Length: 139
Image 1 (cartoon, rainbow, N blue to C red):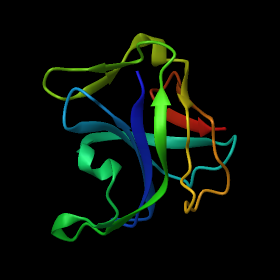
Image 2 (cartoon, one colour):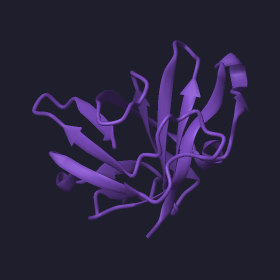
Image 3 (tube, rainbow, N blue to C red):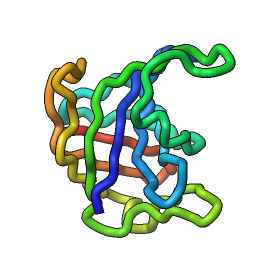
């Protein structure tokens, strides 16, 4: 199954990057806050935050209630090598035990023609360490 993803530059409350993976079963997308700008082959510290509405997969502009603005850095489609994401009936998203060490997410296209991304990444790898910290690496 292919689904959409986006990396958004978000300027509120401080500059960070929101990484969203579409959940085709609900109106939500699994979301991580990336604490550094994603760069090729660099592990980026990430915080799993509340799932965002799927509308943000296509949205750029001001966020409601004075929560800054978002601008697309990269977007496209991805596929999973295993059942790494579980989409719960309540709309929440859980990572399975397969995603504890390393999980590769294959991207079919990870930068728009007018994207700010310096490279067109093909793979994103997820890692959770023994302390529960989460990281993404884009290659």
